[in-house]
Amino acid sequence: MNAVPRRIRRVLAGISLPVYLLLYAPLSVIAIFSFAPSLGHPGPNLAAYGMLLNDPEVLAALRRSLTLAIGSAVLGTMLGTLMGFGLSRFRPAKGGGFWVGTLPSLIIYLPIIMPSLVFGISELIFFNFVHEYTGLLSAGLLTMGIAHVTFQAPYVALVVYARLAGLDPNLFEASQDLYANAVKSFVFLTIPVVRPALIGGFLLAITLSIDDFTISFFTAGPGSVTLPIYIYSAIARKGSSPEINALGSLMIATVIGVALLYYFVTRHRERSTRIPAVA
Amino acid sequence: MGTAAQGEARSRAWRLWITSGPGLFWIVLFLLIPSGVMLGIAFFTNSDFGSPVLPLSLDSFSQVAGYGILGWSGANFTVLLRSLLQAGVATSVTILLAYPLVFFIVTRPASLRPVLLLFAIVPSWTNQVVRTYAWMELLNPFAPVSHVAQVLGIIPPHLGLMPGNFAVLVGLSYNYLPYMVVPLYAAAEKLDWTLVEAGRDLYASGARLFFNTVFPQTLPGLLSGIILVGIPAFGDYVVPQLLGGDKAMMLGSLIADQFTFSPDWPYGAALTLIMLVFTCIGLIVFRRLTQRLGGGEGAML
Image 1 (cartoon, rainbow over the protein chains, first blue to last red):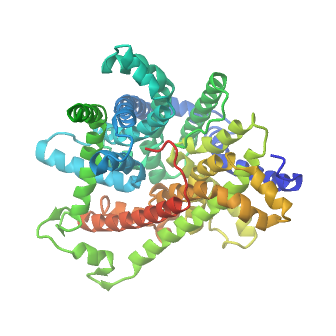
Image 2 (spheres, rainbow over the protein chains, first blue to last red; image 1 turned 180 degrees about the vertical axis):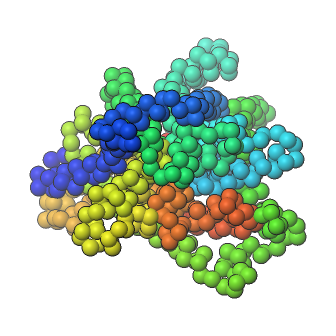
Image 3 (cartoon, helix red, strand yellow; image 1 turned 45 degrees about the vertical axis):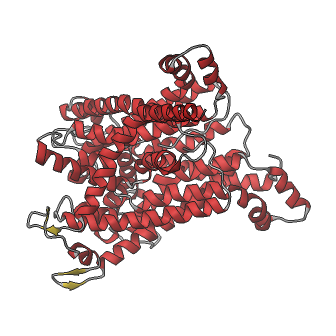
């Protein structure tokens, strides 16, 4: 990297450090405001956090968020892994025509490309019609879960596919030579090989679920208020409050904690400079 | 021989559908069909309750074009133009911030790079509502930032930097910056620095050196970054909703209103169709550009 002169590196640092500051400034402001004095609590205090932990509505929303994230991630990872595996192993190497070659890719990219507002409203209308004509799928955690699986599976498929794409195809030939049938070779070869991708994909699916607001908002029912929806409606109703600041801070702290954990765990396992995914 | 090969191909196809089938079927059932239904609704007539009824008509599209009971209004065009403009400017802001940031990271020792990249991305892992709410706290009329702007005369006293177009721009740029950083970083990390050296040996420097050696090599990354930032920014709902207010309305809020506050599903569906058309145009244009420039996509499906 000595191609970059010292003067330019200084300029780069001079621009980048403020950018880093800017990235964390709003998050820190929320954290600082969460300790702000409020009615009956002069000086910096933890009152907002106390209120939060005793608020049954918040705790219920948290429970729903976790149920939704874990439930949808399990199914999303299963469907996504099978898709990634199947497309990398059984799709003809060249072409395959529209039906086998192009169409599956188009379908997998659809949830990724589609603006989440269009995604959410399409689901809203669809579930509405289904409910009207069959009485099934009334808006709630189930419809939210279905929608979440729909956007998680493609991301998991991409992660698994990328992992398998870098693999020697001879491994599969070898397993066949050793008389492993399709199921055996999947369980004893594919699963161990894609395990890092599987764990990564599962965590990505959970992150995507927790990070999503727009799609959840349009597929939610009155009884399925999750944390992001709770925060959104609280802001819309009464603007900012120390309680919302405290809740936001806890969510930010959790994410940063998980990110650091992830970093230290993967750093020990593999020292390559891998690019973390954006969620 | 021929039958054996055919049998082999058939068993492969069968396995492909056994493994990939359920996931693909799920997406078709729960996204492709619903979005088809949604677009179909655009061609129905609006009932008194906002739900679509027969006969088929193009009324919703004339509503989109601005024709209503009160005559023609350009409000929808303004909203569309504003969405395009906001997405374009926000994308430019992320490019201007991401280039120095990415090259700052790339020129650090290899052991530091993953941490620096991680720190640039972590904020995007927090929930979008929380992130946007944070900017509400930072830009509202009572916040110190607004106070400084008031004193400097940038905004009139007693007004904040939000709600408004500026706040939406800030929110969008903040939200999507990491989506520009990641693909640019991927391109910058693989950069062939010998080309830069060669350029310098030929006495190129400054902007000329950058645009002839560094820029072409990072162009594929830049193009994917533009897609990853521009498209979601154009269709964003949360940011304009929380930071925008009435005078900074974007297409997303206009669409959502037709399904929530004042239901008019055919009109909302027609607006959605417009959003999808612009999204597709953007995608196709930038994909063509990437292909023409020979950007390899490696392990893409």
